[in-house]
Image (cartoon, rainbow over all chains, first blue to last red):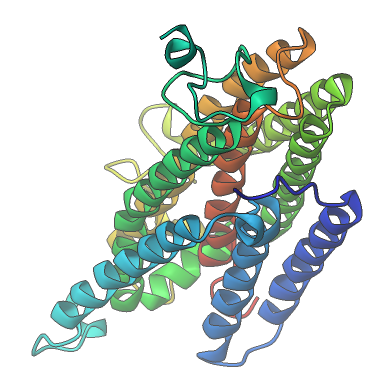
Length: 101
Length: 242
């Protein structure tokens, strides 16, 4: 039986400030042209923010392992959805960019 | 026999036997809380795939029409999106503090933090209303539709810097913009009255440190809605270099 852990408000404040800082980072990066890396940085920052929210605000860090399994499986099924869809679209004989013009 | 039928049953810790919040089919309040939280997480896992379909559609069409997506994105105000992101993160922060207050039994603070969450959520929706209005209002006049950005016959791509990309490609961007932000806003519109109900019950002293599961669950829901926006903001407002 897990002990019901109460996290200090300072932890929540730190997470909140980190989320604000990461939002500034993601906007700042858009000011420069890094080619395809702009998208990679934008998604990297968003995934980091989501992870902070899940671990601390949503208490996943202090939850039973079964909760972790549910979280991991929801991410896994989303990846399957994206991956299988793209195996179709990216393997078509015509280039994606030309398809709509 | 009476022992077996008592709330909590024979397996419950002596201190929790007969606790009004403990339902008879659970062994203890802890087990009851974990079961409820797990159910909420399964619901959220399902929500990930509910939004997931739109994110996949976004991925495919952005891959097909990168120029039109960049042009559509440039038309959205990143400053408004940025400010609204901070407002929503702030509402998640007050929600986290509200759940924490419930866990340590400060009912009045729970009400305060939940009302702050509702206020910040309403500010977010108000800004969204303004943003939608800007794009929808020009479509309502009839006849000439200068500046109308609702996909359909009235759509006017002339205010977008499309650089040769067909206007109908930009319509796909705005279709996804309205569908994704609209579904997100709908989740907030559903969430706000639920938070209000929980705040009302907290004010009546319904929750205690050993039983505040509803506060915790509405918190999980609200944080999930926040996470969706964390992805929507860069994907819709920040395409390419500005």
